[in-house]
Image 1 (cartoon, rainbow, N blue to C red):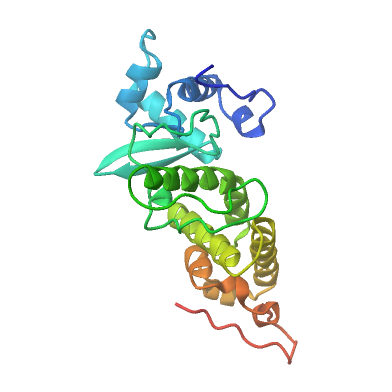
Image 2 (cartoon, rainbow, N blue to C red):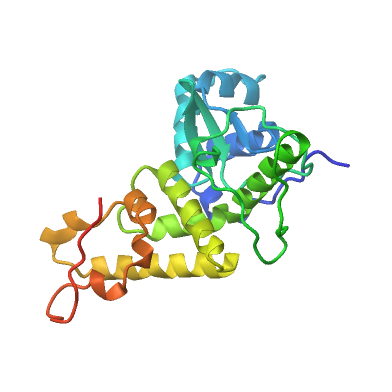
Length: 251
């Protein structure tokens, strides 16, 4: 059985934004990252491990391409114990369910920012294993699998909010919001759809606000953490609608 099935990125718009060195770095990163898509973020280590036979590359060359990959939405940078790491977005290349990551988990996948997995519909088991020992490992694998499954939706929702702040914490807040809906009886698809629709409505409403009121747009992290997506859309209106209730941000 193969260890990795490589995706075809030849028609990827984000990859096409990279220069040749950036694309080469990204392809080599896919090959060298662990089963969770994680790897070192130190440019010196990245250079030595991804380009061991290439002379003339500078740390600054690697650092610039890592930044380009992050700006294109292909990777996310994070730190653990003061050391830099990166994670490929929506990696989805893990073939074995019992593997452990070789690198520290990013903050958006830590247990304190990722809720226990409730039962859901579709192809996700209704009763993910719980408890210590082997059952606990099964639970962590299930959480990781569900997280990988939700990452595209989380990235999409995050990008629709009018005021992005602290991306990793925003992603964790969106994850919690989705699972909060599921715990109240919504299916996974319904939870994602409701939150995404509310985010779009909030963005559309705030786009019509007078410029001097843009400072009242709630940051994405606080908006998702405080359940802004459950506020009545009328509360986000401004202008001449006398029946519109003024939206007061909750901090």
